[in-house]
Length: 262
Image (cartoon, rainbow, N blue to C red; front, side, top):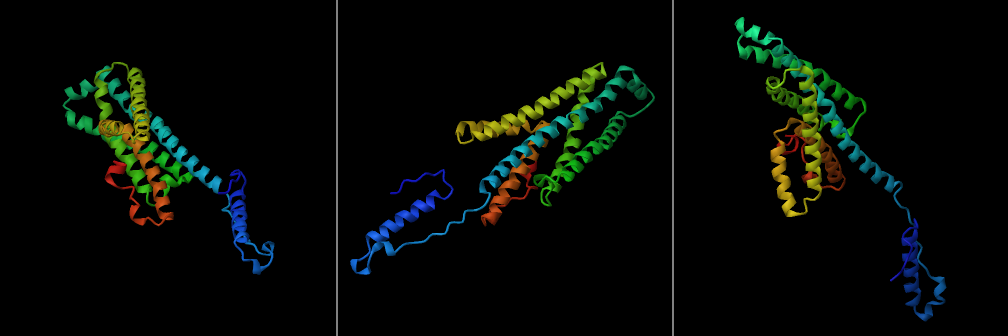
């Protein structure tokens, strides 16, 4: 047994070499001469910047989580703005006038939906361009980028109809806008944080079962689906990089997998 100071950069190989030399010289036959004439030479060449690389990986993982939360906060304003015009038309009786004039309700809602989706494409494309401009590997790599685009556009298609029923409960467009922003932020950020915390304690079987049930319940909220999908894509990227470096190619999973980005 050899005791050594593990804070020294070369402490472990130096002390281990000293121990090996002591064992060698203690077991040399007497006819070999003086034991000090014999010894083992060790060359130690540690990997450079190992700690920096690990710290950078942790920083990138934390940054990707924050990026997903910031995206949710930004996108919460967009679908909420679509209800403002619906509440205004309902309050000024413009909607009623259109129906009295013979407009089919299906055509009315379908036209609103198509127009809102055209408006949604603009901020969605702006976020995608920003991700490309800053070259965030977890989101713009050749394997992850199609999944990120699918998440953004599916979010718009699912979130916009969810906002429409709120137009029947408000008379003031500003009140509806503020209320929906708060609801979107709450359902998005709170659900993601709860899911993330429960996942950290998934070693507990009871909490793991609660986490599985909560994930199924949270899927009804498009904000949660968008944020959690982006986080899972980022984590999957780091796992795949680890599996690739360690030769575990069979463990690499596609970001387009249904239970990952859905």
